[in-house]
Length: 145
Image (tube, rainbow, N blue to C red; front, top):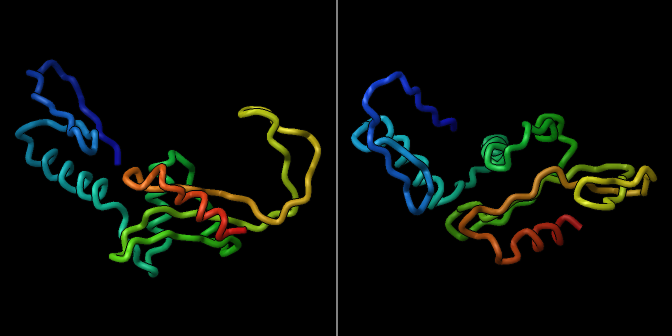
């Protein structure tokens, strides 16, 4: 979802920033109000799981992470792990893929030139904003192992 505003010399519309979802929108604009309601509902309720829509879930996660779309769901080489609430809300997910080797991380920006044997790579790891700091990512990674 991209939010843009053009400034063409007209009077500035009053805007408001939602304290819960942090979206900024124009007060009195029916289109902005509708867009905010949809975004707010998704932000507060989280992603709903539908097994037939697994690809859609990955695209939503990609947008939130700022990641380029992954080819793993299309190629079928990876495996997804999902943590759900009893009512079907996605709390977190991991997208893993088989690999043969990896390079050790020396720092946040530096990697070793030496190859190390590996069997699994993590392409995506995501936890909903409302469910962070509860150990969900750790439990998902334990499930991958």
